[in-house]
Length: 147
Image (cartoon, rainbow, N blue to C red; front, side):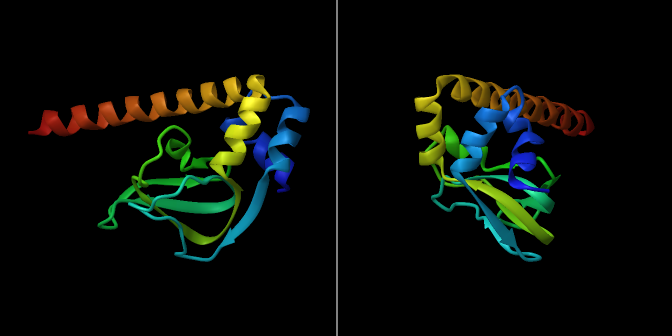
């Protein structure tokens, strides 16, 4: 899958025009990860965010416990766009993976220069974070119900 198609097929770009997606592509870089290579490391001070272009990744705790498995189109590291803090999880490539990398400063600059892009990106990330929170609440309720 090419860069433009990869961005277009991610939830990050939902609702954006082809020109807006092209503007995002202009500030991105394609990176490759080998099997078990760390893409994001828990407690690391970094703010890059990634879209999985091809392959799969595993999100884990510092102890290696799996939190999630993500594949094509998923976003990794999006919390860094909102919070200048240490990473909250480790992300490892499962097999060979190709990712689209955005430096937060470049993405923030684009969102400031083109507020319509910024608003849509923030809405898209907000929706996804809400879905993840709801899922976590259901899992927590199930665990508490067992106790």
